[in-house]
Image 1 (cartoon, rainbow, N blue to C red):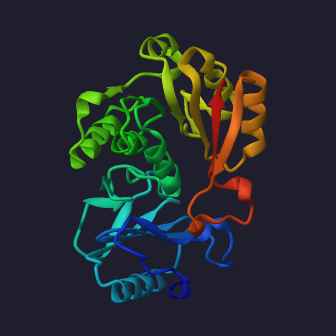
Image 2 (image 1 turned 180 degrees about the vertical axis):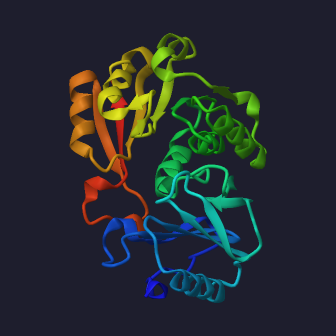
Length: 296
C-alpha cells in the first residue's frame, strides 16, 4: 500500500525531503518522493499509482504534520510534470527556509520548484566559504548558491543562466533575504558562447558549476563539461576554490575527476561533499556528486 511509505516527519520548519524512493533503498516505493515545502507537502510520482492509495497517503501526511495546509502531487511520468491539489489550499507559491535563508518555491509553473533539496549541504558549504570572495555561479538557476554566498559575506557574485525567468526568481531570493543586490550581477547568456565575457569580470576566488546533465540543443554534460574545466585558468585567481557538481545518474565521480585531471591538472582535490542522509542511494554514483578543488 502506498500509505505504508516510511516517510520521516519534518525535523524542523526547514524545507526538506521526507522520503526518497529514488534512492532504491525501499523496495516497492522506488517511484515516489515526498518533500516538505512549508506549508505544502509535495508528493512526486514517477509512475502511475492507484488513486485511492494516493489519497490515503495524502490524508495520512496531512494528519501527522500539523503545519500542513496543502498536499499536492506532481506526476513526473507525464509530460511537463503537472501538479494536482489533493488536500487543502491551492498554494502555488511559498517561501521556505533553509539554514536560516529564505527561498521562493513555485508549484505548477515548471517541472522543478526552484530549489534542489539534495544540494542543501553544498549551499551551506558556499555560505561558510564565501567571505570576501568574488564568486562566479555558472548554471545559476534561481541563484540558491548566490543567495548563500552573499549571506556568507561574498564581495560579489556573477550569476549566469540562459533562463531569464530563473534569474528573476534569483533576484527575488536575494530580496527575500534583504541582501545588497548591488553586489550581485545576473546575465542570461549561453556559457559556451560567452567565455570571453565571463573572463572579463574575473578573476574569481570561488567558482561554482552546477550544470544540467542534458538540455536539448544547449548542454550535453558528458561532452561539454571539459569545455568549462579547461577554461578554469582563464577564470580563477591563485588558490581559488572550484565547486564542480554533477547530477547525472549515468556519470560517476570518476568521470569528473578524470576530466579535471585531463583538462586542468593545476586543480587539486580538496574535499567531496555529500547530500543530506535522506538522499542515500543504493548506487552512490547515481546520486548527486560534488567535488571541491583548489586552483594553484
